[in-house]
Length: 240
Image 1 (cartoon, rainbow, N blue to C red):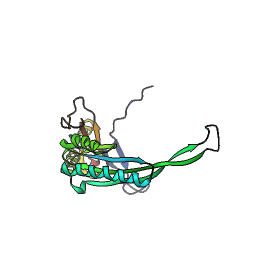
Image 2: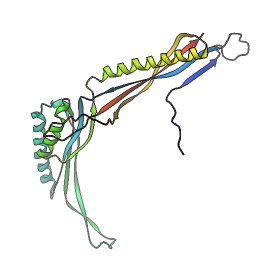
Image 3: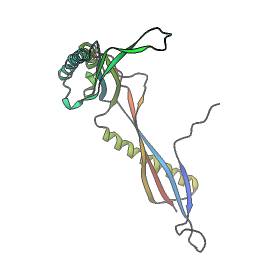
């Protein structure tokens, strides 16, 4: 069974008394129009955040660590060659753990786990501010020894300007809707009583048909597409 989607707009006509209960109060109840405005702005990201790391295995923890350190040094060199600032590289996780195997028959409930080697994992979070270098960086770090890349996300360096733009659109949407309801309802809008921001929707990926390929020809093909930033405002007016 299909369920109809509810339009994310709330229109409430509130009747209340400013003096509490109606008993003993001759003042006319205040009339208020309250609704929610929504503003959305689309943009193309110009920077990327990605987690890059190395997982190494060896019979001893020392050997696994040595192999991991050697690979990470080469990866750090790739970052420097691609003009990635040190402040944009941060260790996100580091782990050394034993790798176990079980000895004995499969049907033997007394199988004894035994250490067969060690795994060392080192991951860094990297902010790539020149998105045109993303594909080349991904390709280069794999060649340098990275075998773990995940959690690629995109953002905009000047996200504040887009947020302010979305806020203006949200207020404009609320005002436009209020005027429509006033005209349809045969009343006039009075003074603005309240304006609040209940929260905003963070950047949301929009998967367009023709996404711009941000990677270079010799790098990993990466589609950055578009993102949408949405803002909401709650506004209330007195009804005259």
